[in-house]
Length: 360
Image (cartoon, rainbow, N blue to C red; front, side):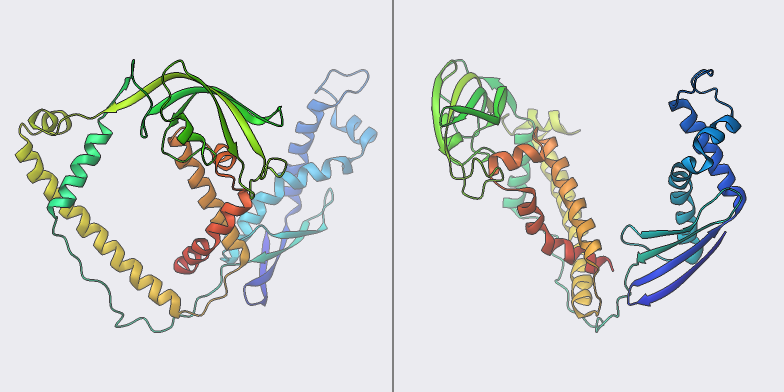
């Protein structure tokens, strides 16, 4: 295989590739083995049509696109490695030649990683590390651990409070008509989490198990579903259960449950040491980030929009994963926050560009 790279301008160039004819033959063989299982020819069982009969009936050209789809990704990757370029977007490919018994020739217009010209970076000031752990920080960490080890207990009597988990059915309607995504059964909603439409959770607070209530809300003007934006909605809500976090006491028993120590005093001493080490690691990482950000701010580099778009997609995927860990997903978040995917992407673009610049 021959591969050459010619830079056109800045971070754009053309990758020209020629692939040996024997690899074209191998790709056509694979394409035939794939296609022959999908066709019916009178007189032959499915998948048993001889190659000569197939080509006489359909033409070898009928295999070309499948063969290209098989061969192109493989040889493009090899050509990228051979020419030592760093693509940051999908290429624009033009096929120059593909035929049985011939070499495979194509050109790929490729956007590559730009070169960053560093500005002044020596002597940059960085914040000093403070690894001392205050009493407030130790208390906050203990309370965080206390929350993590809290037990969810079903409340038999009393009303729902902020922070409780309400297990509810809901059915939403606008002008008396049900709408897509407005219904759910036995949905666990943390009151005060602000994951539902503004005003919804506040009206569930104060309800008891078995209660039914019509919750009236108004969709935000910028709601992603245009047909619901700004509309008033009524949700018929039924409360099945109310669960409340019961926090364990922070004492010697707590220390035994969450650590290898027998007393709270011993655990506090060890936890203080852990927090100090964590602060030292965070301080070091922060110092490195400050240097990189300052150096990046002084650097001369033109960032391809494709790199920013890719980073935004990565950030959206990470955000969706975090939501799923909380029992939600991106679609639910957009539904209840009134934001569209485009809104979220626009919010992330600034950070995405900053990340790309720092990485370069």
